[in-house]
Structures are given as structure tokens and as C-alpha cells.
Image 1 (spheres, rainbow, N blue to C red):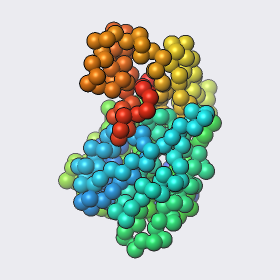
Image 2: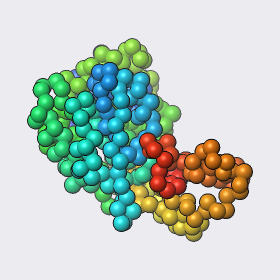
Image 3: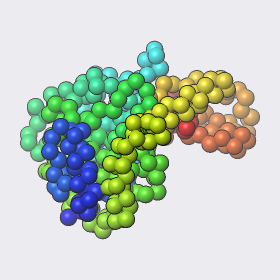
Length: 334
């Protein structure tokens, strides 16, 4: 099948067995893909029927929208709001309202792109409870499933630790966990991703993979099988490479957040990934008129100006929202 050669799937099965506190079968419960992007697409094609709805907490990685459409689905945003501390929050009420009888998948992305939010255990437990209650009213085979996009799981540099969604009560049987090597080892060109989940959800993914790609590159799989365990050893004075990575990103985040404040950009809190979202309202009046022709949102215009005249490339937040965001937010990478 599309499982990948035993060394990498064996390492992944052993590691996720620890994460999930259960035995993971390296042949039937792991699928190796060409990066997490392919893993997401395969998971969506395997689970969606034409017209199935996919719930996306908003803002969301814009890739999801195109992939859901490719898989024949329809996106349903569940907008998060920013609380008094600048933290993004998904309210239970908003999530419940986004669920309809056509809902088939909820994508839970933590650590979250673009905001850098790491969902707390309490927040994830709430999401799990809503999913569990919804599934009590559904027939077997028609459950609301969760795709847990956890590519930034080793890039948690705040107070919150990463929690694997599939490890929560009753979530194992309905969750496909997607991750990859790219973000962890700063090697996005390696293009090795994976899906881990229960046999009945993984087998359709494995059946699809040969139609998309014969297999992910074998040398990269072998190298990654070695890397994942090697990275648990001491590194640069830290207990592991993973600990060093989190610490180095914490330092970079502080440097960038301080620089943004000094430039009158208000940084929102970030605890995961390598992004800080900043509110650029204070700088818009400095932008020359030729950049604001009204044809693009303020955040787009600002990013064009920043790149063209100041050599700094940032990403406007508009593509991460269904409607134009209420204020000009820009994603800076560190």
C-alpha cells in the first residue's frame, strides 16, 4: 500500500504510540506522503463527499480553501475573536453554530497559522466535547471527523505545550493527524509528511496515494527516520534538538515583537509557529497614495509598499479570512 518503507513508518508508529498512549500499527495506521500539503489533500479526498462541509476556525491557512474545493467540499468558517489580552478565541457557541448535518470534517490547526496560537488543553477539550456530542446523534460511518494539522507541533515557544488532539477522550477513532518534517527541521524542501490515525480512516488514504504519487522519496524517508530519534538527544547544550528549537524561536519571537513595537506595529501574542501577526493601523498614514488605489485591502497595499520601498516581505492577513478583516493585520515571519 501507500504506507512507506518500514523504517520511517515504524519510527512514526512508535513515536505516535507514545503521544497517543496507545499502540499504533506501522502498516495500517500510518501513511507517508509528499509533505503535509499532500497529506491534507489526501485526507480530505478520502473523507469528503460532494457537498460535504468542512469547518475552519477563522483565520485559517488559505491552502485549506482550495484543497476543500478540489475534494468537492464546501468551507464553513467558524470565526475566532480576539479577547482583551490579544489572544484569539474560538467560542463554543460559534463552533456549534458552524456545524450542520452536512458537516463532515473539522480542521483543528494547533499551533495555528497565521496567528501563532497554541490551543490550550481546556480549549481542545471543549472542541472535543462539541464533536463528541454531535456524533452521539449520528449514525456509524457518518461521524463528524477531525483533521488535526499539527505541522508546527515542535515549534511551541510560549507557556502552552502542544497537545495531540487524537490523544483526547474518544477522539482517536475520528481523528486524522497530519504533520511533516519541514517545519521541525527547517527543511521544507524535503517534502515528507504523514497521516496517523485509526485503520478505518487511514486505509482509504493509503488506497488513494498511489494515484497521486507512487511514493515519497525513499532517501528522504530514511534520513528522516534517523533524524526524528536523533533529535531527542542533547543538542547545543539543550536536552534535545526539539528543546533547542523551541528556545531559539522564543528568542527570535521576542526580538521581532520588540522591533515591531518600536516601529509602532502592535504585535498580537504568538506561542507557536514562526509568525507574529501585527496590527499596522498606526503606519497606514505613512503609505504613499499610489499604493492605496482602493482596488486592494489596506493590508495588501501596506505589504506591497513595505516590500517595494523598504525591502521587507510580510504577508497580508486578508487571504486567511472569508471577509475583509476588521483591522489591517499583517503576518511577519521570524
